[in-house]
Amino acid sequence: MAAQPCTCIKQFKEFLGTYNKLTETCFSDCIKDFTAREVKPEETTHSEHCLIVQGK
Image (cartoon, rainbow, N blue to C red; front, side):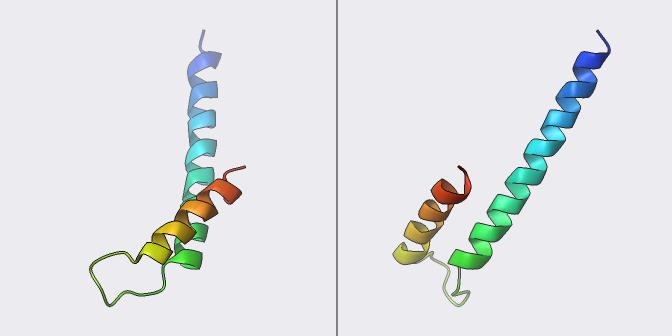
């Protein structure tokens, strides 16, 4: 019974590590212009594609 929470915590930590790496990679590759408040359409498209490719 005690092994279950430990396994869940380990899986959650692995998920967070993967999520953080994925978002950092896609953000740094896709978002280039910090002078505007709005996200440009090409940045959105690039980000979505990155998430699909990197998420596999």
